[in-house]
Image (cartoon, rainbow, N blue to C red; front, side):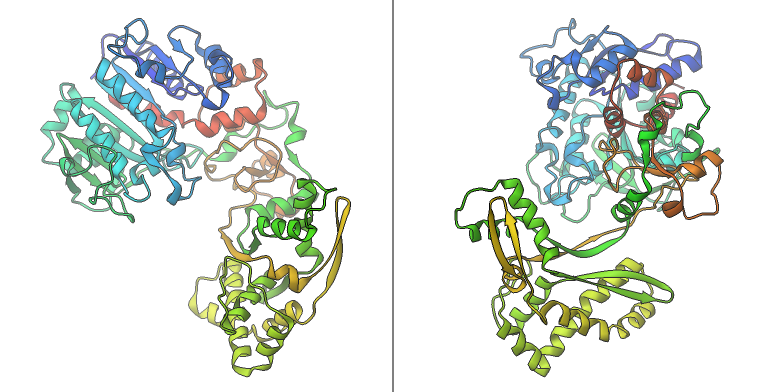
Length: 611
């Protein structure tokens, strides 16, 4: 279907205009105005103290696209209007687009604290629904994190069913796809869900009805999303659900499980019937890798501030640690802070900062951790064991009410009693061996069971050394906290503290240049060490190939420039120029891209929609 007149568009939660970037590009490619933006909205609650047009994203949006039709205020002021929404505020539209804020579904939050549609930003779905009720556009295209189909944590898929039901009641059919942009040739592995809805009266709605008895074909070849983003099904027959049997509001229903959503990576809904499949992407054409978009010295737009993106060689080990595998003991500082405060007995002369600093230093001063090298077939890792982890086991062996997540006080006599008892000593050694083995296996990434067993067999001497080092002696230290001083020993401090095991997977360091980049997150900017920021070997980048050196140790490392981050999302030269002219900080530009979408994915969907 090709429109003879431009589609009138509303862009909600516009950010710096990712959807509009795609439409401008398609208009230029076609040589005609296919899309005409008649209403746009952006509002950032964290900047609510500012006038809307003074907020950072709005400043950039207006610099790029102008003031016409742009509403730089809280969308609730529109959607909460009593009675009809005036057309002077929101005119008639044919297409509504938006990447409604995803904080409540974000993978950056643990699943068990995700609030879903009940959350403060997830409720913005209801603002979308109100505008759909009022203006009834033929088409809707929304983007969100893929967590949406699994939200909320205790009723997987309920929120997505609420959205689908809302579309059904308003006379829409819906297609959805979870898309990893890197699998379609784009230079970022950004994984998002795209929801495309259209009225049943549209050509797309009529086509869907005509093919409804071929659901697999709709999902893999005939649907709009299948044509724009080719895929193959993992199963031939889709799962089928009657949406009317699922939740129609945000109340918890027994229909939803805690472990899995009924909705898979691809699906469509027509008249309340839901068909869903797990699909894999099919890439056509050449992929774009990180190295393809890097700016080199001498090229246009190479930043004059490039030096500040370089990582000093003395900091490389901190970056390597942040990005590396972790399996180690960590402490809740609040327990040590509380203990120190109690020891000071109300004395003054110190600040909260000094108290926290002392709590941070104390475990090192008292050697409360024992670090040991563990070698396996030419590789070596350093494993740490905390004194508190021994306290827990000793207390357990003595029949005390031990808990690994609270302090467990033991005495010198407790330690001697356990070490002198042959049976209890073996149990303590087995406990320590289990911790050391688990950490070494994790850090070495040993997956083979035989290799794991081989490593465990050689730990005997290390186990005994660790136990002797941590409980054999009781060192003490005198520590100043502001104007006060305390003398503390390891037994006492370890009995007032506790350590817990912390695990984290490793990430490539530096980032590979011959692959799409990882997902940009909002904290990408700034020089502070973070596992989530992109770090590249600038020597390899300048050479245009992988050099024969250890990049992490011998190469010149740097963070990505703002223009490189913007290129990863496919934003235009006009966007970068607007940011530079407005003197938007590097950190803020990175924040924009963490909240943005991959423009090329939207282009492909919209192109298929109007063709």
